[in-house]
Image (cartoon, rainbow, N blue to C red; front, side, top):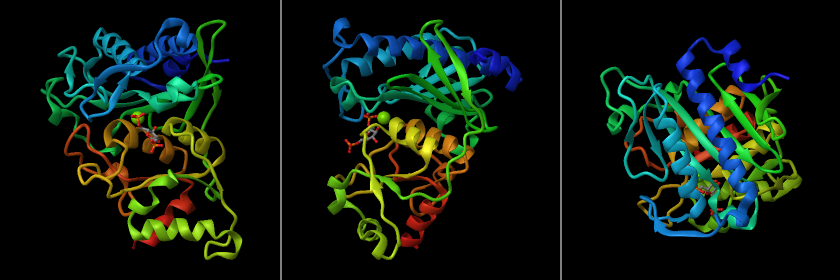
Length: 322
Ligand code: AHM
Ligand code: MG
């Protein structure tokens, strides 16, 4: 079985990009180890502080963020990093070719209950002459990502990766400490009858989204003509992993709970990298009215409405919004 680094050397002709992805993998092994220890290492619970989005940070949010920040900053290939847990981008090495954006621990409400969480990452080329602390350098649409992926910490630790040429999965063999190639050119089935949405927010959605969900709940006798199943893990990494494995649709739509937050998920380090993976696997990604990866970002912590997964189902949601 092919080790991640060997795979990268065979599939990628840029040594600096290989270094960045390899370093992400090394650090995520460390995060996986911390998660395995859990309470034994005293890492559960709140860090008793808030991040820039006003969310209460968990100890592991802070630990995972520091591990990624420190290890990437030490790499000559990295010009700067941006993170969910950092208010501003952080400059690393002035000659580095890449900017790395990440959500260090996605689904953090799952940490304390020992349920799946993940790390999401997006890699952009650093614009010529840009500085790693310069927010404008990062504000590139998702379709300019050089690579994207996530590491899922579940019963096994799995990295899902794309460098723009298909989606590949690697499982961490903890006996040898290496990510090994398991699946190549992963494809998402075009049709599905499995959806994932936080139903408790229904009354806050746009009428079009409420109508779509009302109709799918009507099952085989309703306008959509099939009986749907529902799943909600409360960790985007887990939902997207399920969809990349067996199809489905994931929605975290616009809602009017808080006018400052049009949707919960962040464009640059959640929606864009997941969109690149999904589209590379033949799925579709949309806000319900426009392509996520075509959006010109206005800020690194910008939020966005997310509808992604099996292509035919995403198109149905878009039709409700036309
Ligand atoms: P986080 O990055 O602060 O963990 O928040 C993102 C997570 C997603 O992984 C998940 O899809 C969503 O928030 C769950 O939200 P909810 O609390 O509405 O279930
Ligand atoms: Mg997140």
